[in-house]
Image (cartoon, rainbow, N blue to C red; front, side):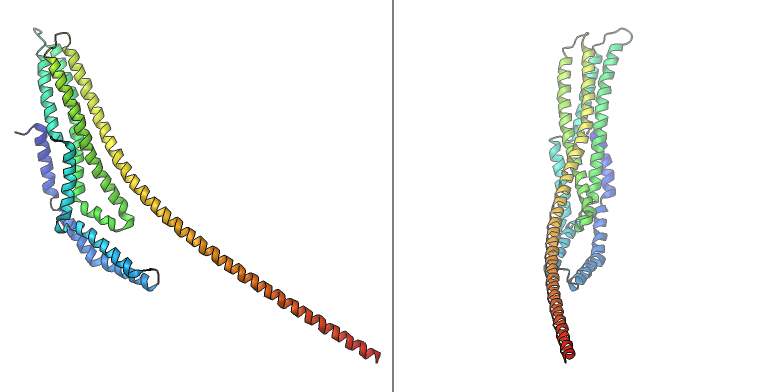
Length: 335
């Protein structure tokens, strides 16, 4: 018979899985219809107009490459050949592999059983005649700390598994975003969420393993406890489990930060490549502008020089004509 948390997880996940079973197939189907009816024809038409306008340097190679890339993406979107199922199984297997031999929910059941045994053991040391006040307090401290730890861990991991299930069910939408550059941030965010869920399972499993070892240590010490220190053991259990609950919250934040850092690094690398290409384009444009300006200056200088020479020749002709006219007038008066 499965434990409390294993049964809880199985019932909840089976319910969501039954609802989301056909979501990926339906989404891939209508996206394939949209791609074949509208997207591909519009893209080829747009590229044809660019080719006629002379905007493409090598139109055939560029169009063949873009269409091939789109078709490869559509293979995963439509789950052709079961490739999308392979990706989903690989992601789920990676998460289960990080969890270790036992799942998070089996470890929560183990912690619950150890807390129950430890609480009863400490309660039995109170030999009061009427009201077992110290035993009740010791048992309450054990249960309070363990319930805090178990509740926080169960909520965090349940949310992580549900989010991963939703992300895998809607995977065709986000994989389709790779086809267009202005939608690639959506794919990066989708991948970041999945990595966060995987790291959450990893860190939660590590923290629960440490807590189980600590409870084994306390349970072994409880067999030698006396009337004077069994309440101290209960306080130690409460502090240890409360600290583990705080560590569990920190591991969740750490998983989100690490996943976000990886997505941010990919975005920065993409931006750096874009800046580099823009810089190269700008330098090429600046060089072309400089060459054009130098050509304009040279042509302007040549035109100015020719105009100056023409003006000087015209001035010389005018002077010679005026001198000839003066000489003719002098000769006329002398006669």
